[in-house]
Amino acid sequence: MPSNNPSPSESLIAATMLSRVNGLGPRLITCLLDQFGSAEQVLQQSSDSLLQIDGLGPAVCKRITSASRTDALAYLKRCTDLNVSFREMDSKDYPTALTQIPDSPPLLYCRGTLTPHDDLAIGIVGSRRCSPYGIRNADRLAGSLVRAGFTVVSGLARGIDAAAHRGALNAGGRTIAVLATGVENIYPPEHKKLAQQVMSDGALVSECPLDQKPRRGMFPQRNRIISGLCQGVIIVEATRQSGALHTARHAMEQGREVFALPGPVDSLASEGCHDLIRDGVTLIRNIDDVLEQLGPLTQPTQPDSERTVHHPREMVLNPQETEILNAIATTATAIDEVVRQTQLDPSRILATLTVLEMRRFVRRLPGNMVIRT
Image (cartoon, rainbow, N blue to C red; front, side, top):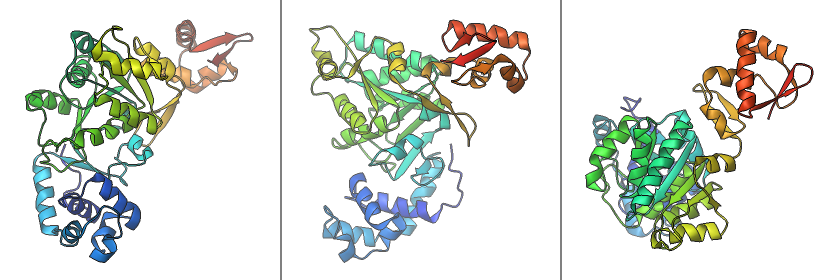
C-alpha cells in the first residue's frame, strides 16, 4: 500500500540518504546509528568523526558527507509510485518482534501490508534443492500454522521457502517474504507471480535499497530478519551446507525457538536437520509439537491493545469461546462472575464451558466454580 506520508519526514529522508550510500551496508549503518543516535545526526558528522567507526574508509565517509537530499526525495517519490511503504525503527508500525533483536534493520521496505497480528509468526525455511517429502511437509506445516492463527514467514527462495509461502496462501492465511534483494527486484525471477500473491495476502519486506540485485553475502544477512520476525523457526530439509542453518543460528542467538523436521535417516537432504535434533533442537512431527513448545504469547487485538495467550491453541477459538475464556482467571472463578462479565445468556455460557472443558482449556471445580488451565 502507498506510504501514509505524502511529505516524507526528515527522519525518513535522512534514513534513505544513508541507505543509498554505496559501500555502506546494514552492519555499518547500525554501528553509525549506535554511535551518533540517528541518521540525521550521522549525516551532520565530519569525515574525521566518521572515520572513528571501525570498517569505514575515507571513500565511504566522503560519500556519506556528500549524500544528496534531492536524490533521496526523487527516490522516495519512485517508491511511492511503486506502492512501496517504509517502516522506520522508531515508528509505531515497525514490527515489534524486530525491535527485540540486537541488529534490527534501521529501515524496512514493504510491498503489501504488515499488521499487528503478524507479530504471531513462525518461519519455515529449508533447502532450495529439496525432495517431494520436503515440499509436501513444508506445505502441510504452513497450512496448519495459518489455520492456527499464525503468519508464515520465509525467504521466497526456490524449494522449501516457496512451498511454505504457497501452503500458507492455499490455506487462506497470511505470509511474509523477506528478500535479500530490493522489493522491486524479485529473485529468483520465476517467483514474480508468487511474489504478487504474497503481496495480496501479506507482504514482501527487505532492508535493501529498492533495486538491489542478488549478492551472495546478502542472503545469510537477510536470514536474521526472517528469524527476528518470528516466535520460532522450523527447519524443513537442510543439508549440512544449507543456508537454512544460518537462520537456525540467528534464531538461537535471538532467543527464538528452533524446530526441525526429521527426514529419512539416510537422507543427505535432512542431515542438517538431524544434526540440529541431535544437538537439542525440538523434533517436530506436526504443529501440535510446535504449539506445545511455545510458551504464553501476546496476541494483538485492536491497534493499541493486546491480550495474553496462555497457550497458542487458544488462537483457534471462535470469538464467543475467546470472550468466555478471557473472563476466567487462573484461580477459581465463579460461573456467575463469568455471566456478569460477558453479559451472555447463561445457557450459552454453560454450553461453551463444556466445550472448553472437553478441549482442556478450563476445569470445573466444586461450588459452581471454574478455573483456566
